[in-house]
Length: 350
Image (cartoon, rainbow, N blue to C red; front, side, top):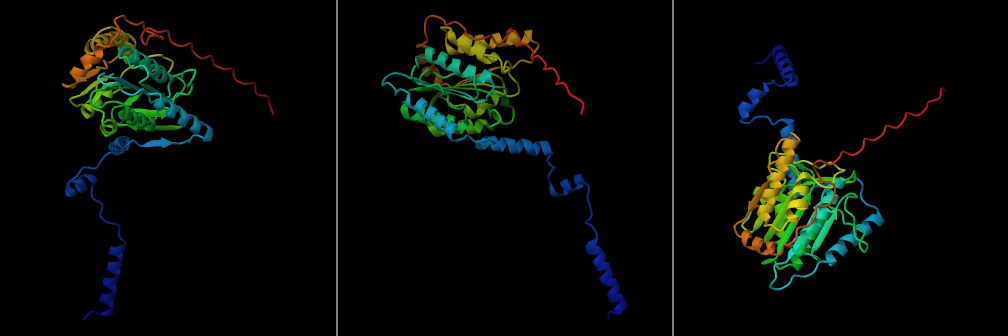
């Protein structure tokens, strides 16, 4: 039989045990007990960034007002409506060129690349240009260039898939922007919006559009991470760098990045096959990087076995006379003049 004293002692010890903090085990012991290693905050953040990029997540901090929304809608509608239909018995090339970042170099590179590819592959009237910022200028009839946004990219690919012959025609997709080794292609429209397009996301856009024959040119740091996701038998992929390397020349004041200048502005203006143009561009980029004491970017090329047949046919369209490079060269260009510091305002004593 429990006496009142014994009952009181038991109750007191029970209350103390209930109020005591749980036994704290060392983190290593807990991890071993439950069979996992604790993830570092950086690893968790990188995983979240990668998952967001794979979904095509975009953050908009300053939505457009009514006037600019209408301007953008009209610009994109006009760009899509101008696309000429495919020609039976002809392998038509449809060019989609987009600058995903608002730094001026990407807009200028996008606009001139579209002109080079249109001339090289007889694609006049089958071109869509989209870019952020003020780098790309429109025409007299269509002065507004649609934003280079992930949504506009998806719209462009969807419309091209509708008007082209997906069994014989070719999509030439050019994307230029900053790149990230973990999340892929950066999207930035000033301070208004931002996000990323991951390799799996870009592959999904192309696959859902059902476009079979693809020439994909990516001018961005670490763009080699896109090769495994985009590879198939009918695709050719050219990237500015390997999966582990940055590329160079993306200063906002430039007209070209290293890759854009060497490949588009110089090599693809020559009457030579695409693989030879890439080899020439890669050699030139290596020369520039050595002279600048930069770590080699190691541009990549991947040729799908079935793509070689249509590549030879569109290379037959190349003009026999070489074009002249345009714009300020990416290498050896004079640096922009330094900004003059403004004098400090005169302060009067109170």
